Length: 549
Image 1 (tube, rainbow, N blue to C red):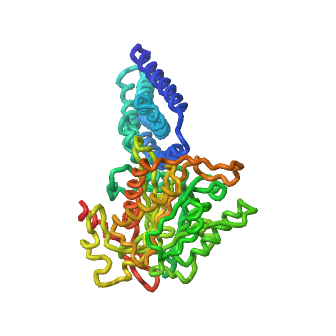
Image 2: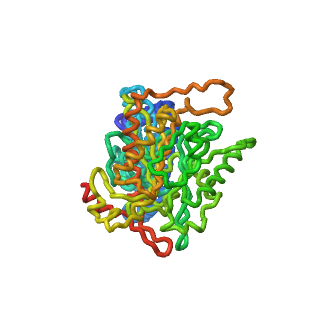
Image 3: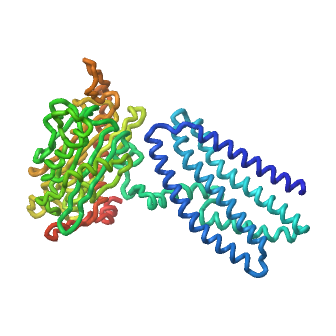
């Protein structure tokens, strides 16, 4: 073996060794909080799905090409073997790169909490691993394979020919799997995101609308961006007239009954059936998950919540179920009482930290908003760290009327569809349930003030809280230090609250998130035909976007 070949082999070994050391260094870095781990795990699921699908397909193609090269006259077996070696080494580089890159992201984010230098170190080293592995395996493959070929043939010409097969194999895998050099990192980002969402059912964000207001959204732009909050849906959409469902919101990870949540409710217009209001108003806390459903299913949902609570609290004699509603009777056979206790319990059971579904789902299945198909909508805002760094998440069930306004544009008038156009008073009626959850330490008094801002967000969309509209805002603070432990033996409850002067950013965040959540419900909803053939068209999104942009 010549000195040059030996040097190339040693360089390849050293490069791979450095990559392995870097991998161990990255994996030993802290991964951050539970929420960060959850998001990172979802990304890893997507990446795994991506690789699994890609490599399965590529293996079939690669095997076919290998067999063709073996039997193709004038090519030779060694060229086919070179193709196979190149493909395998490229595949290994891709696998290692994907494995590390999707794990380095959360570690980079955690390192960023210590400063840009720490984050850059993790990000640079993580990105370098893919390149170093490609380089190291490439050197080993080319130099090692050439050395073997030269020993077998004894001349340079015969040794070089099979290397064409090696290059072809490595390039083929790179082209199909997008694993070559710097292109891999983008391939991991795009491929894992898209394919992973298809394979694993990870929700895809709808980027059709720009952010409302000045504050940034959370990672999911959802109420679940507030740590510990889970959302679950059960959708009943079958036959010609069943168009209803249940949406469950679980405020935190502890038992809501044993660790009660500071809560306030603001009534924008009281033509509704919000169960549990009086006790929340009196005591300033809630003790169950929040359930949203249709008007006539409030008793059923309340009973289900009571049974859910009693299951883990055996000696309890009083439960205050918190159940909101809107009337979906135009599309749904509401008198059929299709929502059962098991549906409510299923929505609670299926609740997850990553559920960002919107539109015709859960309690929003049969709703109508501004004369178009309404539904479930959600959004979030993160207040800058200089203002506290708190998150405000909002979920809405939209079923109300008025004159649709988006980002200040009178869309209802431009679409020639709005309440009172032909003295049609019914179209203005309906309801909107708004749930606001924040991790900011607020007591019931400031939560009530926060809830009032939810109605301001509704007003910005053109909603008017008409005579027949039940518009309620439920606001909760899930700051852990303020949860109320009913088993505490202490005499004094010592919560920590923000000063009044520090809550204004949260007010703005609630307005922005509520406005966007309502608009998101319209953009996500689809045309629906329901009871008696009644049809509600979805918002004509292309027209709306043309008006806006």
